[in-house]
Length: 478
Image (cartoon, rainbow, N blue to C red; front, top):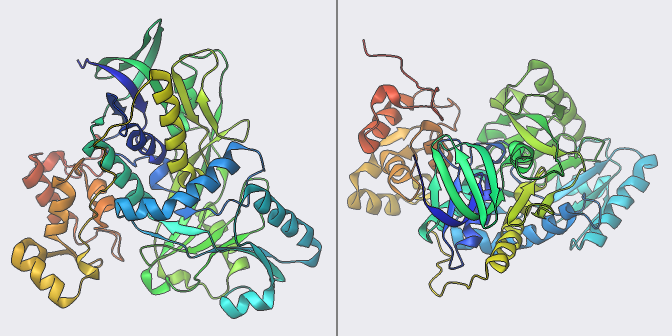
C-alpha cells in the first residue's frame, strides 16, 4: 500500500504529463506523477509523427491553435536546455489541382490568424526546385519554415528527467482505478494503494475521459483514432528535406512523408476510429493505404527500404479541441484531455499553462534553485575518432559495440539504465539510446541488452520485459 499527501498528482507520463511535471517542479510544491506502464512515453507519445507543427491547420480561436503556436515557439530553447533532438526543417502542404487553390489560400489565412510566421504559397515548379522528389502533379504548396521534426521519446524523457531532478516523484506500474472528491482535495485510488492530494492533473491520453468522468458530471468522450506508419532505413532519410503534407481532410492532415531527426524517412499515419483504446496492431490494408497515398505526394519512394511498421492511438474528443483547465464542477481537478495532433508540439505550452493554474490555486511560490538544464545522452556514433578514444579511455564499456546497426555501445546502454528514471525494459533502453532501431530491428542485439539490463538492474533475466509486465522475453531456463 502507498500513502503520502501531495499538493499535486499528475496522472499520465506522456509528453503532456511530463511537461506539466517539469513546469510544476519550478514551484515550492510536492508533486507526484502516476504512470500505469513501466516507463514514461509508453502511450500516444511513443508512436506519432514526431512533428513540431507550425500551427496553420488548427481553427483560429481554438485551444489547438493557441497551444500549437506557443509550443512551437518554445522548442528551440527547450531542446537546448534539455538536450534532445529537434530540427526546424520546415513543412509544406501540397495542392494538386487549380480548383483546390482556395482551400490552400484558406489554410494560409488560418495560419496568419494563428500567428504562424514566414508562411508563403509557392508554385509547384518552385517547390520542385527545392524538393526534387515532390510529385509532378503538384500545382502549388503552402510553405511553413517554422515547422520542425523532433524525437518524441527524447523530448518526453528529457522533460521527465528534469522534473525528477527538480523533485517530482514518479511512480510507475501504478494505474488509477478511482478518484474520490473531498472538501480539501482528492483521494486517488490505484492498484498500489491510495494517495491523498490537494489537486489532480489529468493527462491520461486516450483514458483522459475515463479519469475526468470519475469526478465530473460534465462527461467527456474520447474516440481512439488509430494511425499506422511505415519507417524506412536511413538510406532513404534524405529523400525529402521538408515534412510533406497533403491538403487536410475530414480526419486530419492526411498521409505525410517526412525525414526524422534520426535520419530515417517516415510515412503515415492512417486514421481509423477504433473501440479498443489499446489497439495498436497494424493491418496490411492500412499499411497498403500508407504506401498508396504517400506515393501521391512524393515520387520514387524506396519502399523496399522499409525496416518496420507501427501504430499509435490518439485521443479524439467529441468537441474536436483540447480540453484544458479546471473542471467546472470539480475544484482542484485540472484536465489536459483530448490531446491529439498537434499535441506533441503543444505539450510544453500546456505544461506552462496548467502549472501556472495549479500554482495559483495553491498559492505556491517559485523555487529559487530550479535547474532548467538536463544532460543529454552520449551519442558515440556522432563522435570523432579522437572523441571516441577519449570516452573509451575514461570508460572501456564505450568500446564494446552492442547494437551494430546504430553503433550503440554497452556504455550508452548502461547510461540509459543508471541515470535519473533509468530504463527497466528493452523498450526503455531503445527509447533512450536507440539500441534496436536500425535495420535489423534488435534482431542481433536483444540478448546482450537483456544481459546488461539484468546485470545492472538486478531483475532476473527471465523477468526482463519488452515493456510492461506480461511482455517477458523468456519463459524459462533450459
